[in-house]
Length: 79
Image (cartoon, rainbow, N blue to C red; front, side, top):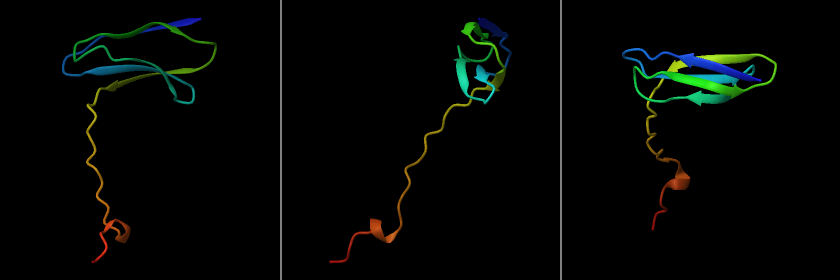
């Protein structure tokens, strides 16, 4: 079968819509745009069972700074 899910966009919130299986594994994601943008999964294929519909705010990923090693193995040897 198929499952249809729709979410109306709201002011001041960039929303993301996800369909996950019963274990929480995300199967489908809708992230169509910024705040006020409707999200939807109009024809998500699914089998009989339990699913989770997750609505969350979009958070821009932050680039991680490279780690600096400070152990003896990373230090240059003395001449």
